[in-house]
Image 1 (cartoon, rainbow, N blue to C red):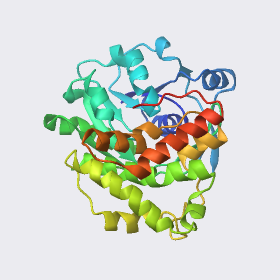
Image 2: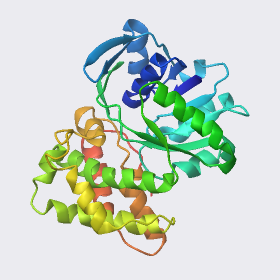
Image 3: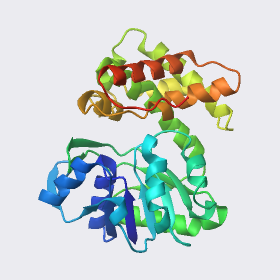
Length: 316
């Protein structure tokens, strides 16, 4: 399969590297200049769990990419998704599939501005990756990715993508309800990523906070109310118990510092808060409801971005 990875930070580069090792023809593109220069000068370095490897893959600016692709794998940050699509949309031909694996909410609406439903695949992954430096990334887990075709007639093409993932040791399954899975992942990120980023702590430390479970229950209840407006329903009590397990020693990755912490604290980069807690706050506000926890978290994260001198856009 010929694959273009659009957005080649930690997740994009790691997925591209593993898919290439699985026999696919992979092209990486990115707009982060330091990343591009590092790969051009010394090559791409991937630590695959515990094995450090020099990848043969090259990385290009989107404006340099030409050719035909079977699959475009979108891994740009949420706030840069539309900008990336503008750059690569001409590469999406009649039978090209576009798979969105971004964190966050509201991306299907953006994709539908540019592509027909028959081209769109939506997915969610629990793989974790980390930026070690420009052009140097750690893939810390080969965990499951769920994928679903938006057009009901395109399941066969979706299954082909799933097979390419599985053949490359990136476990993937077909999702009968991808909207639920996307909201579930967003809910986990909304209760953990933003809190860890604000307080400069890891997930274990969050679990040890006073009233930690009650705090995440309140955040989850706001996500549940917003999800219900889109026809997605989940039980707040069940989600709270499920979510809290990630903050206890029962979870192997409990000492993990989530991606928003990596962006905000470690690398002084803008966050995806507007597509997690911020999305929930906007969704409920438009419906005449209020999300006090998500609204406050969103404003505090943007406040910390401003204090650190990080350029950002506040989506209202």
